[in-house]
Length: 482
Length: 94
Ligand SMILES: [Zn+2]
Image (cartoon, rainbow over all chains, first blue to last red; front, side, top):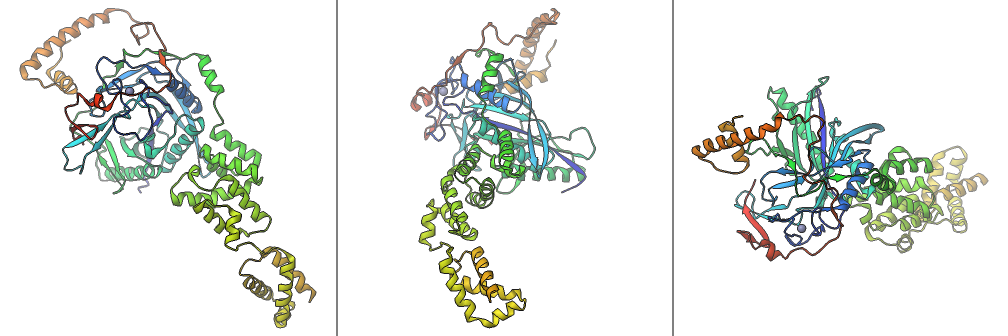
């Protein structure tokens, strides 16, 4: 990567708001229905139909705005964004142009202990378009199919300032934004179902230059990883182009996940000219202070507050606190586990370590995993009372994760229980010590290696199940008697 | 306020209209005279007047977030020129 340039990134995130019905009609927003079965004359753009705004959409937008430290507009309206596309039945999208519902917020990201505030320019309401499916091989088929189930699903488009300086920051912003939306309960944020989507505006400029370079907009970023990789690729492409004396063309590009490249989506069409104008079918919104206050009062604990609580109450590190508050489900898991096994640091270590590793390996979320807080707490108790060693616990936990079984059951079945009672260990130690008078002599002469030999013999005799700490203690006592 | 042929072509493209040379000339004239007429509004002093967001002084018309049955797929697709497996069939867009 060229070091003579600074990368500048801004993100446009579309979050689907969590409503039962669409933004302007009573069709369901449920995911996964048969094509065109959640469609009515309004959301399929039949002439003469009229949209009526879903009140909950406004509630959720205000809530999001407050969670993102935005100013909530006292007055806003809806506008028509005009363009032709087969997934847009009215040939315009209802959106908000010059008077968005939320303006001027921010969120804070934390990367390796460095906190950065990322500005949020605005957040505005709009309706989603339908879905285009290409039939057969995209290069040869002359047709596409249109499913309007998504048409009219409520979206909040959240636009950041160009405040990010690398791909990692962009990813951290996206993760933090997702976490805030999840905690606020305004969106499901399922990237694979399209309820959280992201476009990245990327440009580069020579270090020290004030003006922004020409930017490109990257679409089709369906995962955090895709976001990170695409920004890295695109920044490098622009730097290479500039170094070769080329100029950057302002255009829309798409991310090709398989090939790991961004590709131009430029069509022969001229620059977009959406001819926005106020939608006469919808009345403007007046949002009273009381309305805003009422929603403010209903805001739940947000990730930053929750993280602060973990730091103050349990002495967790900022990093661990941030990781645990990555979603409400993750925080819940922590809170429930700690309620049952009140050693927050141990719980945190297991969540950050083995649990996180296995979740990543299986590519699932914490709420989908078979280990529940009660089972983790039970396992930690088995470690604490010496039934199993910390090392055995790792094996037990993996089995719990894969099968969802009870830890005590796994320990019993695998014959893993640690031997922790003195009555069975002491005679064994006696026997081994008596059998090896020469090694005892070595020990007396100060050879620490001799001690290790005995430990090895005891562990061998117990097939590794002796409680190592206890063995250590008993053996030292025994040898000192010689 | 005369509209150029180029501007007419641009607006026609945005509206997906195909115009011949005669029509371009004709609409350039007609649109120009419409704009000229509307331009009279510019003579008014509108300082301190808020732009109108809606023709009627009504606000906050809502519906509750309640799902009602959608239309049947057959009805929705009845007017589509081409249908395949329950979907509108359209020329491929890249
Ligand atoms: Zn509908």
